[in-house]
Each structure stands twice: as structure tokens, then as C-alpha cells.
Picture 1 (spheres, rainbow, N blue to C red):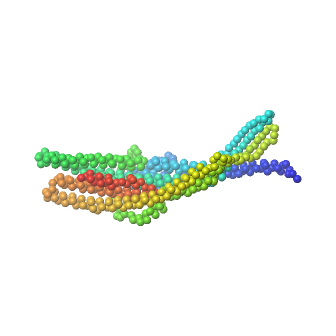
Picture 2: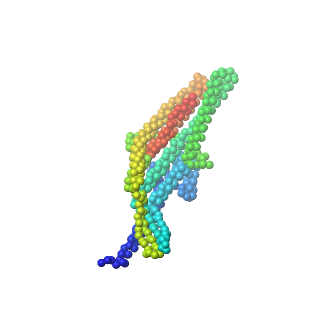
Picture 3: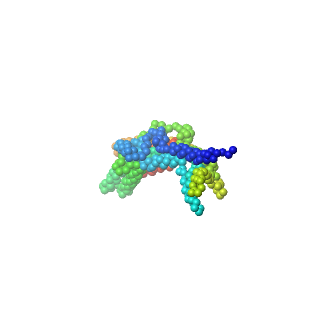
Length: 479
């Protein structure tokens, strides 16, 4: 017995409704993708707090900017310590604030990837004689719907990578600020000592001039003293230039301008620690906690997922499902559904899969390179730290005390009229030069300390730690 016509029409009419219900459900699920309250900034804050013990603040409003300006003003109102300098840089550096904005950009892309694409609507009108036919269609990209979970997880992993990269920017800025701070502070000390050298040379040259006038000095002796004076003036000019350039580098990292650039630094570098750090398992520690190594591992995992997604969708780029409704002035209205997909006749997706495999292998090699470089960098940083400590301690315990004893003995001989005033002034210049070399050795130690701290948690900038040559030059300049 054939079914009743009404019973055949009912299921046909119900199909579009079920399809519409499925689409609405998918749209609701897609609408669940939303922004996080912190924009991913909590992870960066935690890294700064745990690794540096410092605060970071994302300036997303005028109120945030005012709060930062107030905190920076308080820190700059007193002589700046190295910890305060790092804190000012983390709050006030605009380049770092620009990096924070990457979090917002990436999170927006993650949210966008979690939302359904807009459906398409088509409308057509045709005529045949007196017949008028109107065609309406609603299409939805099923391929995107099927791939949404994979794309969502991929974007979430990319967001985690961006968080790690921004955290690395925080750590790098802190390390660079520490090194710039110690360099600027040592340059100010050097200028003070070079001024003493110049004053001694000036007095020596003036005394030589007067003694030549009374006939107690010949032209050669006076020219030697004048040469000392000219060399001291030249070294002072170089020291003052180094002071200006190193301070400006610190200014740029702090992100200050205008009256804020008049901040004061302490008069001297911190003392050398009683003993150096002993780190026998420095490589293992670095590999366990370095953010760049962790980031390389995450990148390898993400490219593996991307490779799987490419292999899955290599044949299907377009898969559309839609409902249609055709009405005519002479025929009953037609309803139905249609599906469309791309025919892989010319492009089988092999190129996309090959590219994804190449990118995956490239990422694996990058991850291995990062781990190897991390081991080497932390070894170099630690040996540099130990060498800098030994050199600074040698200056503190041997070179400077020895020159002080020589100076004391020369004063006794001068009082006993065994040596002249020029020998005493020459010895004073030598002593000041040794103190200058000691300052630079201490500066190099604190720079090496900053490099080691950075090498344990991220990629350091070891090239900037080349300071011993400058110390030797400065020491030689005083003679």
C-alpha cells in the first residue's frame, strides 16, 4: 500500500529544519569563543614575578598609564639602584608595551578561529516564456566546521608561544637594563678618577713650566710632563664621552625622557660578593628552565599538529552544505539541499603536504639547535662569570693594595727628600689608573653576573660582555 502523500511530505519538510537546527547549534557553540579577562597577560606577570621578582603592567588605558607614570616617578626620585632600574624599564619601556600588544592581537586571532564562518546566501531569478523561477540558497562551509577543533587547538598553542616570546622579551629587557646600568655607573666612576688624573697632570705640567723658567728643568723634562698632561686630558675626554653614551643607552632602556633623564646614580658599584656561585649542573638547570628551549619544543609540537591537519585536509579545501528553495509561478515550490566540494583533479595537495613536512623538519632542527646553543651559552656565561670574578678579586686583593703600599713608601721617601715631586705625581697617576682598572673589572663582573642570570632562563646577549680590553686600555692610559 503506498504511503499517504501527507506522510511523504512531512519528512521532506523536516530535513531542512533539522539541518537548520544543527547549524544553529554549531553557531551557538562557535559563539562560545570569547576573550579571556587578562588577555594572556597573567602568564607574563607570573614569569616576571617568579624569575625576576618584578612587576609588569600592561598599559591598556589612560588610568594604567597614569599608574605607571606615578610608580616610575617614585622610583626615579631617589638614586637609582639596579633593581629599581630594572623595575622602571619593565614598567616604562614602550617597546615592551608594544610586545604586550602582541598578546591582544594573537588572542583576537584565536577567538576568531573559534567562531564559525558566516554562511553564504545566493539568489537567482530566471524566466522561460511566461514562467518565472526564483532560486534561493543558503550555504555553509562544512570543511571549516570539521577542521575547527584542530584549528582551535593550533591557534591556542600559537597563543602559548606568543606568551613565551613576550615573557622572553621581559627577561631580555631586564638583563639588558642590568648591563647598561653597571656600564653607566662604572663610566661615571671612571670620569671621576680621570679628572683626578688630569688634575695631577695639570699640577705637574705647571710645576715643570715654572721650573723651566728658573732654569731647573730643561726642555726635554718639561715636554715629558706636558705629554702626561695632554694624554690625561685626552683620556678624560674619552671617559666623558663614554659616560654620555652609556647613560643614554640606559635612558633608552628605561624609556624616560624630558626631566626624567636627570635621574641620579649611586657613586660606586656594588662590592664584589664574598665568593662566586658554584653551579656544577649548570647545563641541566638551564635546559630545564630556559624559556627559549621550552618555546622550541612547543613550536615542534605545533608544527606536528599542523602537518597532521594538512595531511587530513589535503584533498578537501572546499566542502559546502546548503539548503535551496526554488519557487515558480507555474510549478509548486521546490525545496532541497545541496553539497559542493572541490574536485582534486589538478591539485592533489601534495605540495601543501610536502611544505608542511619540510616546515616540521625545519622546526625539529631549530629545536635541536636551540638546545645545543643553550648548553654552550650557559657554559660560556658561567666560565665568563668565574673569570670575571677572579679578575675583579685579583684587582681588589692584589693590584690595588700593592699600588697603595708603593704610594705610601714613595710619600715617606718624598718626605725624606729621597725622591722629587714629579716621581710622587707619577706614582699617584699610576695608583689612580690601577683603581680605574679595578672599577672596570668590577663592572665586568656584574655584567657577567647579568649574563649568567639570563643564560639560565633564556638566551643571553654575550657579545656585549666584552669589557676586559676596555679595562686594559684604560689602565694603560694612565701611565
